[in-house]
Amino acid sequence: MGVKTVRRLAADILKVGESRIWIDPERLEEVENAVTRADVRRLIKSGVIRKRPASTPSRGRVRAKSGRRGPGSKKGAKGARISVTWVEKVRAQRKLLRELRDKKIISRRVYRRLYLMVKGGAFASKRALMNYVLSLKERGEAA
Image (cartoon, rainbow, N blue to C red; front, side):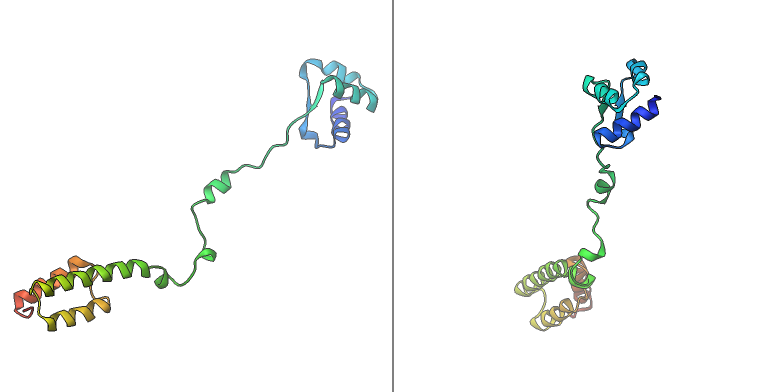
């Protein structure tokens, strides 16, 4: 019997695919001399033919995917998701406005106007707000 036939019979006996059958290359003559299923069973018992371990699927794709999130896992619109940073920014700007008002750098009337501008999102940052206040001072409108 040929090696291919023995491999097929061994796969059938061991209940695995042919690709998982290992045949000892040093003892191929014994394998070729096998004539019956009983001979193949004897070769399996003696360790000439073995079952290879099952290969596990590669985790490469899973590793590549980790860290990425699709649109299905996002809750709320983009505007709703960035609101946390907006809240932090507005709180910082309002704190700056209070400090400027308490130090009498800006009047209460200007404070109220700038407060509403901050609420409306007119300033990108504290620095932008400060630049605006300085421009008001140069024009003589802050005090």
